[in-house]
Length: 311
Image (cartoon, rainbow, N blue to C red; front, side, top):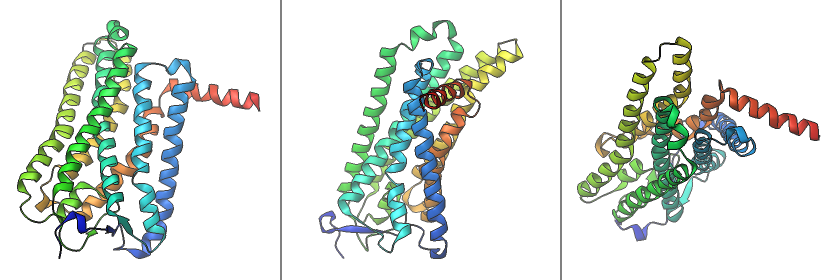
């Protein structure tokens, strides 16, 4: 069997073919989840653009998060739906590498963006009098640019390292999309050096942001505990609760999947963890941020009121 990337024409994505009788049910459920993801995140973006009251740093970054989640989910779910709907589970080598690069870039960008959003919450809670000075529009635009560039650079490094690895054996990926851990399972020859480099890159993009977020919330909790008024405490905690929940969902499953060595990675558990951070989390994000958010509810009422009046 060949061990050269140039001899590879494509891959077979097994997806969830272990349970073929459940594929129609999965197709319907994932279609519903994907539709809700598109609707929810598109609504957040539209409201953030249309309502002047939402032209704040918090909603500026939330708009970026919603756009990321739209792209993030779209990079994987359509391929999964195609595989669930028909017998053809193949993907070309070029398509697989492109999917890997795009997914890594978007996921890495989201890691950095969640750090930026935690910094925004830190400034709002710990430096309320200087908040508008700290989070001025120019800084927000620079931070957003840095998050996107950081994601692209990380993806470029990891994808390049992956493409340099020789792949051996039958080109079957026990997954529903082209993800790094299952790619590593196909690598042959001595890949310990490359794996170590990739592990360092993944640790930097996952562990460092998670540590920075935890640090910012330690300061936030200290600041909130100094507030004597209980209603003030509840309001301060409420502004951060949604962001902390998103962080826990995203980083928890991401660290579980990406910081395991190749030898201990379970493809079956990896598939289900990936379902969570590629489908469930992007669907929940709009609900988490808006369920108890009065500003978003008011903006939605205004937009719907304008639409009904014009109709």
